[in-house]
Image (cartoon, rainbow, N blue to C red):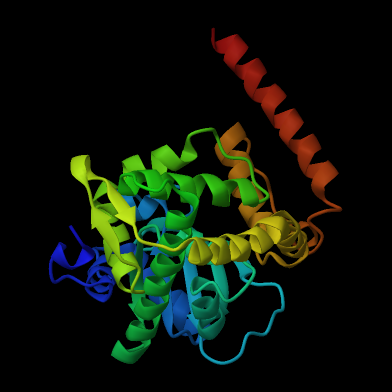
Length: 312
């Protein structure tokens, strides 16, 4: 059974519907505020808060700008706090040029994080206009094409779509400089079954990669040995450079992360229960102020432990 029997839905249809998913009003308001301040074309919202609708923790946004990319190592990362209708909101914001985002999603850059991230669910929380929204949707569709192409090159000769996505995420997590629990790829698929259901055939068809549908829900991609080798060679280069590139991004973020002190203070209080006062000096010198912050947290934890002991 060939790919033309999967119905009339296209990858563009699926992507547009996915990006139009419900995003709670406070998140849309925050996205609009970020967009207006930056002069953005569009703002993507992603992460677990997209799925749950929760406003707890830190919201994740990508702000996409018109014009050329300014930074050579992107995206620029910043932390923002805002009170909307009496509700405190916190966000980690990545900012980059729309064209760089689209090129990275299409696999034309060495970076793996864009297409690996945005083949997963995201919502278009704000758009400048319909034209800008179409640019964002095309880039997200490119991410699905890139991810699907690598998934079938890495996966078995025949398998379920989950087998291919699992092979993809296992490889991309291993290539990045970050620690994930074993089986992270399974939790992604389990939490987003509706999103991934039927996505692989659409992403393959969108780039004329044919496949046969076999028994028990499996498919057999019809890719030549030459095409598989070409895709794997493309991946090997990105795999080799994945960790060094991510180290460079982390080093850059450590010196340019706007609002880093406030973000760290929030994380410390969330995990220890000890509030950290951010003075202007600490805001300007987060590294130099770290010993004083640690001393403050140590004393605070000790005081909390003593208070709990007396309460017993």
